[in-house]
Image (cartoon, rainbow, N blue to C red; front, side):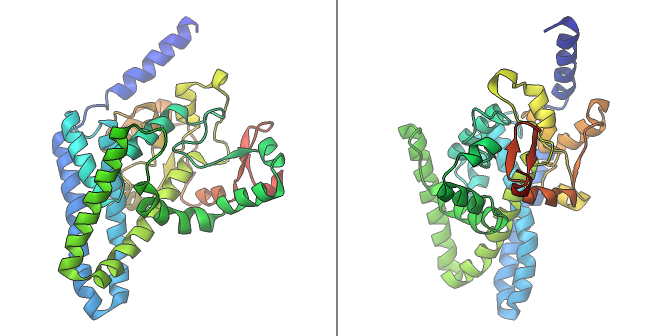
Length: 330
């Protein structure tokens, strides 16, 4: 690495480090304006069921939006970026994890692996959406090709799988986990069951399901969609371990997903995902500010609300053309 490259690397590190410090007032206010409305909407839905279930379903859309926002808080706590205190991050992360049906320790262990391996063709498999290269796909048996096609089908990825992953999949431990990590998963499940039992005793099982299932269905589907677009777009960068570079993969292997301001608010600015991958210590409310105030980010081509839908058709990584392609383009 020459002196000019070293200077360049030092420069971007200096830039992003200015936004690493969480503001406790903003963090607590985000908890209040996210968890508070979610609870209020949940209670309101108990009463709207008696009037009109259509009204309940309408409120579930907004409740799901706040659940996504709560998940961003949970996400930031796992990175230690939401509060200066690691102990406070952990406590808030565990509590918000119960609200979003996600065990804190398990999810964040896998998510950290995602950050360490994103864009690396030789380290796929944990914390990401399965993506095969053209060569890998062509060498599959007919049955495995069918499986991959079903897996990558939008209905499976964004309608069927998300709610199953968060309600059922997150309850299981993995072989690579230590006994302590497995215990945390089971404790999370027991805590969730206890909380749900109390709610059911108060409102009844039918009311609980009629409220919680639509919220989870909408929130998990949109959450997976967000994660998908962040790393599945036409000119995303994938490479092997020898050529893997932290800065390049952060800026070109993660998208700038430009959303309308209201969706940006509900998703905690996570559309500025390239900034997040440059520094996981930046709290979500500083991501947009970091992007807007520094010209080094202005040349990055964004994925827009409408152009993101092209990602639904992209299935394979073409190593020759260095881009994601459709099955029909093989």
